[in-house]
Image 1 (cartoon, helix red, strand yellow):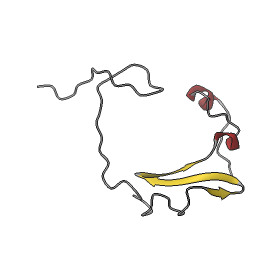
Image 2 (cartoon, helix red, strand yellow; image 1 turned 180 degrees about the horizontal axis):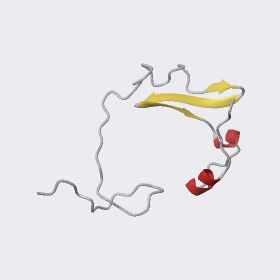
Image 3 (tube, helix red, strand yellow; image 1 turned 90 degrees about the vertical axis):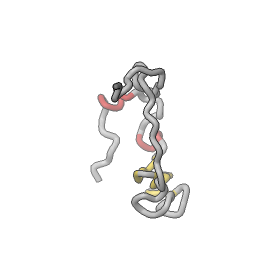
Image 4 (cartoon, helix red, strand yellow; image 1 turned 120 degrees about the horizontal axis):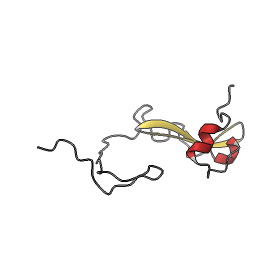
Length: 90
């Protein structure tokens, strides 16, 4: 009896190699924490003139354009890990 199948051709961008796919189904994921997909009721908000999108889809997230963080959006994970923090201490 096979409990776990590791071999497969599923790929995830940025992750080396392939493996068996894992199917996930998220039920009622919209507004999990706030009750709304867009907790502010806006698709784009501005905080200190920075455009952001607040989304609550299974987990609340805030999306900020890379250039407002001094990045291009094309940095590799190793570059981000080795660099200065992009999170303001304020």
